[in-house]
Image 1 (cartoon, chains in turn red, orange):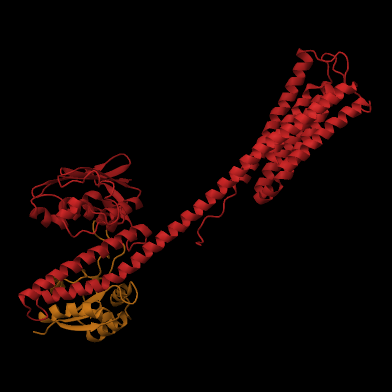
Image 2 (cartoon, each protein chain N blue to C red; image 1 turned 30 degrees about the vertical axis):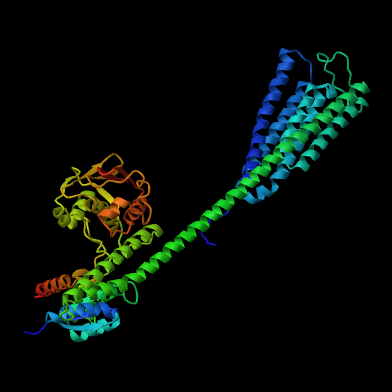
Length: 457
Length: 137
């Protein structure tokens, strides 16, 4: 395989997990604010008597812990990403573990098993399911269950003093064993059911994510392989056509010398046959030239020359100069609207030459005697535009999408000119693409065609 | 009148033959070399009136190196007597001059006097040869 395939990206699943760890840390700031606000409101507005100082100390503890977490997150991300990928599970486990401890303290100071804060254990079960594996999530849930049971039993046995919330529960019920059992039963089952539901969903999502990553890798791989094959094919075409060029040139040169009588007198018939052969080799040479132009554009072979500032007015003028005989021959009415100031384009002159020769050549080739060709050079804000309109044979609407295909020639074009390679527009499009330009063709069948080439400046 | 001597440096014997026929028919004396090295040697020994030089021979740019060698400004150059000989470069299709429309001067300037494209058109060839020989005098 090629060596220039990009370095495998971080799997998006891992990337996502790391993002979620950060999200978890962010949530904790909000939690701290929530704890402070709720306890202050409960104490001073609702006049619920509870130990405010220990609760605020717990909040401060969480705040401090979160500072440590965020610092560690940024630190290890900078130091070693792979290390982070490996250890982010432990990091998440540690955070959940610490949160459970903080939560159990909060529960204790807000009334033990009677505290409404006990519902908040469910949040961490869901977070554990999102951040951790299924097994780790169940382990964490069990740890939470253990904490809740221990707290309630220790309070029940009065090993830890129960904090009574007189405003909410005028008569303590934490020492009612039936109440204790039923609360514990529902608390424990809701935690495990939450763990089950959350892990089922996240597992499914993770499986999909993994499938997508694999699929993406496969597609990228296949795309690179295809690109390589296409390049190899173009290089092959380049070599073959290159090899064909010299012998064809030699044949053509020799035929020309014979035709002009330098190899001695030849009969009229022989001369006619020679001219016919020359025409055929001439076509082959055009084909070779077109193929070379085409694959050169495709494989981006370095050209012999560098790009330069070329005035498009000059380019159009010089192309027309080479074609003036044909223009006269067909009695074509030709108008060229140049730009007021020179319109400079950064381009390899040979490339612009090929583009102009093909497009103006087509206009001249497929026009009837006495037709009109208009060429407009335009400078707009960020682009240079060349419009070539002709009153030629036009392109049928069924053909308009095919004319840029390699070797495609429309029937009406074949009828006028039998010797075409069908490569001209493919070459032109490839070259224009190299300069981030684009080509647009508007045509009415049997009426005429306007080709617009646009280059960014 | 002494017939002008033309040295053709090209590794393709058929192209050489195709050029030799019209040139000899028009009274030129033709000598040939089938590689750059031999071409340089013959240029130094024979001091022809004109050199026709192919670009692609053993390497894709052998002709360029021969041209640079022949036009070397170095005073000790073996080819200092060849500096004034006009060079007509033979190029295949799609190897253009690269000076088509540019308003400014070409930075990659080749020290040759003119170009002719393959396949060879005898009329074109004879015209260019005659022009270069006239200019030389």
